[in-house]
Image 1 (cartoon, rainbow, N blue to C red):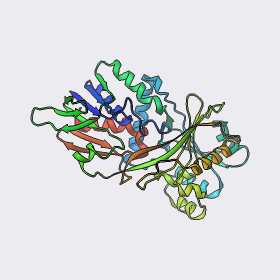
Image 2 (cartoon, rainbow, N blue to C red):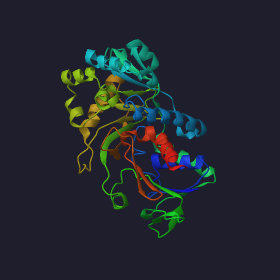
Image 3 (cartoon, rainbow, N blue to C red):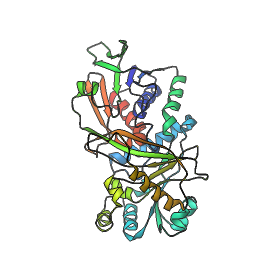
Image 4 (tube, rainbow, N blue to C red):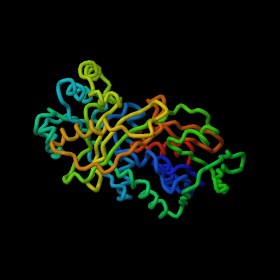
Length: 383
């Protein structure tokens, strides 16, 4: 079988990976020299802890297993099974963590409630949180992991090229897609006038929802979300886990409970965090720098500039956890990802022509869930 994949972000690349793994030939088309969207502009977190139960958690757990296996074969991914810590401050935040531990799927997520001393042993860099009394405990999730988002697609592509079954065609924008008819192949035409035929086409176009996607699929139930993030110079010491703050309880569906309702009613968010729909997520990169975010903007048109108040808020929170000044911020950026409007759906997977499938809208789950999303596509299409 010959599979044409359009879009070289992490979702498209994982579809190419599964096709090659199953012995098929892949032609991979990308409009840029390499992917430039949300697949690079993220934390690189394989984030199991906050996922909703049922299909979403099952997908995240399966993806976590796949990431570990792929990481063993492609060390350049920088896969690390580091887990995550969420420091909790006060009885209301502690009650949400305790409610999470009472979930029937808590063991599958690897939840543990650690004392301040235990959390400090797990992540000594968080001395500000656990030595100075800022936090009294922490929710630990041992199933969380990380990869390097800026280089993951490059590492996967290098491995795919070594298979001899993979062709990468950058700097080409697909203009038209034709479905298969009878024994005829499905086909895509790029902006160089070249036509590429195959047995199946997967459109993994990320947050590009207009143009070709609208022409062939109409208005799909997927929205675009904008976020802001930043990265620092090396910390100078290991940050041994990913880190979240308790605002993540308000954002991720796994923490929904009466205790969360009480937190929302009894402890207001910082005004900046509330205005920008914020949480703290933080991961250390292999070079020692910290990736820190994030905000959420849902209303169009998006701002074309970044706002400084959210960055200042994040610096305050991080410095309170570290108990030291943050290293120099060397990068700030904004990114846009595609999210199903029904946020309980893991992804929007739609047959738009015979032999042609559109796969988009995983939201902030794209990096986490992409290997399992692509595996499901391959299974459903009978690759």
